[in-house]
Image (tube, rainbow, N blue to C red):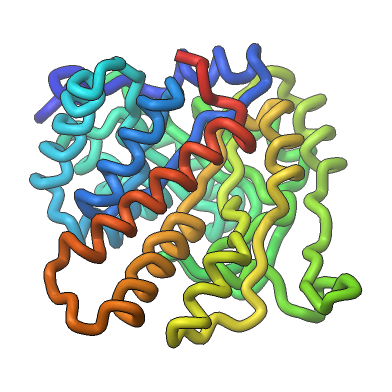
Length: 330
């Protein structure tokens, strides 16, 4: 058993309390490799933002659980080396079983998500409660989920969207003991969050996504005032990255995300954690594709992963400063 406290990490409880009071959201950035981790930590140190390092089940398999633990410990030390100590959470994204959550907790994660949203309601409660009881015994925070987001993210696939029912949240939170709740109000996973049929088009033919269901969020806030709310599938899918990828050989069609002004509005409410993954993938892929296309003789990984890392850092600094409002909160 390795405690996250030995690695210099923190759980999310105090971060969420401050975020709700300060009307901002903590960035939850997914990572799989060293360059992504460097970009996340340096961006958050430079903007003085707390951060949640997210690891999906697929990322954990890709990076290796032992290496991940030392990467997280290294992230803490890297932040200090950069000159500013920021709170860092290591979080399991979309855990799908008690065994996976338990394994992550025992290997140094400070926060876990148990996603039983695909299960019948009572089974979701039972699974979530079991994880909470084990996690809280180790001072690890737990995120549950009500409602289903459409889209694809690693091993998480859902064809249909199911909005969170506000009347269920009090019962779910009280019976499970979760520390935060991921809800479904219209966000979705991946770079193609909406079909063209779900959108309108502006005068230039650009897809305009449907607005988020803030009425559901407001009703949930009434039901559980001051309780930490989480938004998944909240990448904005910057069109400049989509254009660059397609210009240099990509084939991303009708890629559309959540407008940043809607995310900023959400961050000013009880939403205190916003997950961003696809935007980072797009930023890195755009940079790598441009290097491959403009410098076809290049074969040193540092020469294309370096620009990808730099672009990712720039993007995440923008997110903390202009979208989530978390910059300067450390």
